[in-house]
Length: 122
Length: 110
Image (cartoon, rainbow over all chains, first blue to last red; front, side, top):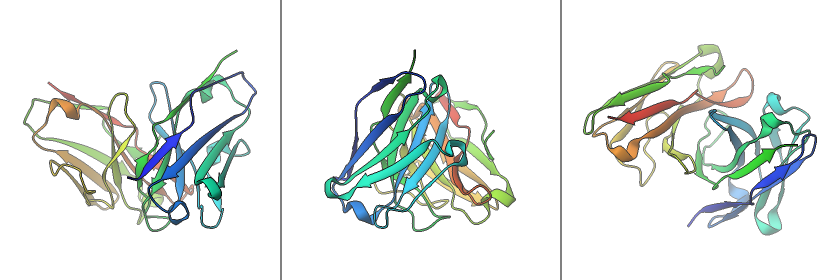
């Protein structure tokens, strides 16, 4: 079955970077975009960015300008999200999700990975 | 503050029906499709409705979606205790080139 499996929990110091992986299985990795979404404790869902595994093209929310890098390794069907300059406000559950939509205005995510907790603390 | 506005919470008794609204700004949402996600405690979000009113395979037909202009609604009929959780609408914001989620609505089954 289609599945996205993410890397494990991370604890980082302020100012550090974190890299979360998302391994896809059960479908052709290059056929669907991967998106990254996070949820801080007690907050709602926040979209971070996307990756087109077919072209390698990426995009991200202006909220994370200069701090987020989305990449991939197609040989192992894995997407990555790296966030730098961490602060306590980046403590959150980070999700990857497959985009089943068919264009910029037609995006919907299914399935989602299990989530990766990231704690930023000194 | 999200460009998609949802009520913070709704509650209803078991077997009843609830409706969650999602109001978007026309200049931001335009022709984007509205989607709905269910986020239950301790679980990953789940796609509930896509492209305004389409039900994904495997999702109960107790859930239904509709759209009118730049607003959308999610209805849950035959409310069950297992439906308790958060529900988010989402769409592409073409002004900011971002995918935006509503602020989320907490559903409580009384």
